Image (cartoon, rainbow, N blue to C red):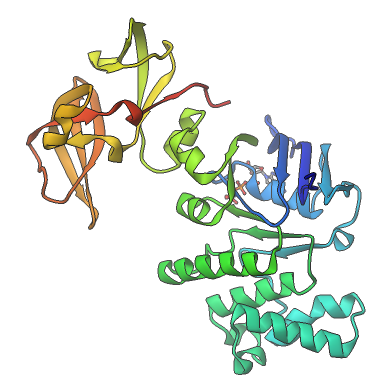
Length: 351
Ligand SMILES: Nc1ncnc2c1ncn2[C@@H]1O[C@H](COP(=O)(O)OP(=O)(O)OP(=O)(O)O)[C@@H](O)[C@H]1O
C-alpha cells in the first residue's frame, strides 16, 4: 500500500549569518498518524527547524511537503498546521473557550458547529466547564497547556507542531501530561512533531525519534533502535547512560580496547564499543560470560530500584555498571561479565 507521508522535508537549510547553518541539509519523513520527536541539546537547531516547517521562517534551501503538497512558499496561515508553543502563547484577554474558538472563527466556521467542536475538544483535553470560562492567568500551567493543545487541534490540522510543550510543568504533571498527550494524539489520529531536549520524553512518547546536533539530523529511528543501535558516539551518549570505549586493534576473534581490555567479536580500529550499564553481569552470573573484567568500585549511586557503580577496570578506564541495591559497595572488587550481545559497535563519527 502506498501512503503519503504527513510531512516530508528535503534538504532544509537555514543560516543566520553565523559560520555554520542553524539547520543544515535536513531530510525527514513523518508517517501519517505518527508522533515524531526531534531531540537534541540546546542550540542544535530544533526550534529553527520547527519554525521552518510551520512557515514562521523561510529556508535558504530545501522543500517542505505537507501530505504530498509543496508548501515551501505557502504563508503560515494557509498551511493547516496547529502549533503549541513552550509558553502556550494564549490570548490573555480571552477565556479558554474563546481562545480555542478563535481559529474556527477566523476560518468562518458557523457558530453552532464552532460551539460543538470547541466543547468536544475541551472535553477531550479534560478542561472542566468552570475552567472553560476562565482567562489564561486564572488557569494553572497544566490547564493552560490543555487549552493550547485544544486550540491547535480544533482546526483539525494536517500536522501538529509542539515546541517543548511540557518544559514549563513540574515533574509529576509533566509525566501525567506526557501520557495524556500521547492518548490525545492517538485518539485524534493527528500527525505530530514534538521538539524536546528531554531524552526520556522522546523515548517514551515517540513512534520515531530524530537526534539533532549542530543543525544536522544524525539518526532517525524507533526509540528502541536508537537506544540499542546508535550510529554515532553522540547519539549513544545522549540517550541514557553509555560506556563508550575506543577500539585500539583487532586480532582473530578478539578486539582490544583502550587500557588493554579485550572483548570477543570483531570491530574495526578507531570505532567505539558501547556497553549499556545494565548489560553487565555481576557475581555468579558473570562466570558464564565470554569476556570478564575485574575492577574496584570507586563510587556508587543509589537510584531506588537499582544502583549504578563506577568501576575502575583498567588504568584510566572507569565504566558504569548497574546492579541491585546493596549488591556491591564502595571499595569492593567486582567482576563484570560482558555477554556477547551486550556490545554494540558504534560505526560512525558524529558529523
Ligand atoms: N533569529 C535568529 N537570529 C540569529 N541566530 C539565531 C536565530 N534563531 C536561532 N539562531 C541560532 O541558531 C542556532 C539554533 O538555534 P535553535 O533555537 O534552533 O536551537 P534549539 O535546538 O531549539 O535550542 P533550544 O533548545 O535552546 O531552544 C543557535 O546557534 C541560535 O543562536
